[in-house]
Image (tube, rainbow, N blue to C red; front, top):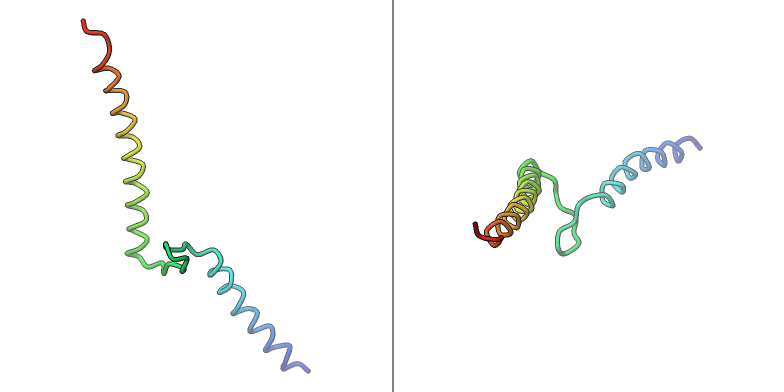
Length: 73
């Protein structure tokens, strides 16, 4: 009577975090969960920073283009 309860609770305690991790994990282009290693984490941070820099450069480039094409003195 107690053994099935203990086994069930143990399986739930092991399976619940694994299930949540599988559902919440980032996925690659094929839909498979990506293994989060320190290298992959650094890569994702770099890509996020590069995207932010590219957006800032685009904004700066647009404002410089407007200034360059403005009325000549």
